[in-house]
Image (tube, rainbow, N blue to C red; front, side):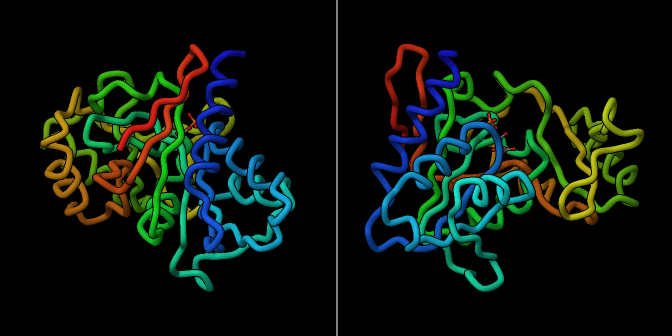
Length: 233
Ligand code: DER
């Protein structure tokens, strides 16, 4: 499958280029691309030197399956380098994340990391947030605040909806942190306006975190369908 191959290529390139000998604490993101980051690290002969901090249930399983030491943010508040996927990346390296409903722990790990590297296949590399990703900005909210926040997001010009658990579950998706996700469509968001939109959403009482990662990544490794890897900085 060429898309899976491109995910593997960009993930391996990102690890090989950026994981340095002095790095010990590694953040592992969520999704299907970061699977190859954990696989690559899991194959390293010196993997016993590493401790990996997860960003959710699936991420934790990845670390365990690749037989890498598991650690927590509590005892590792500073992370040397973190790798994670993205749903969309713009020209300013801003990202939409949260397609997998793990955005809160992902943003905690990214914010705690000295180096934050994105790995993604080229479908995500559209240059403008909202151009390719049409499911809206994922926003983690305190459950009983969801209608209040839907009203405020609508007033801000968004088209919000609570992420349903169906067909797997009657009722909404519940995150690893016990909260709801609201996906809010704001159409295309020019890179210059991403920070302001993020601030406005964050200011709404009851919002825990947004899936707008504003200027957090230093680099993005894009796996292209033709087998090449593009590095964005
Ligand atoms: O939820 C997230 O932010 C994930 O990193 C994610 O959406 C990327 O998923 P993918 O690597 O499976 O495309």
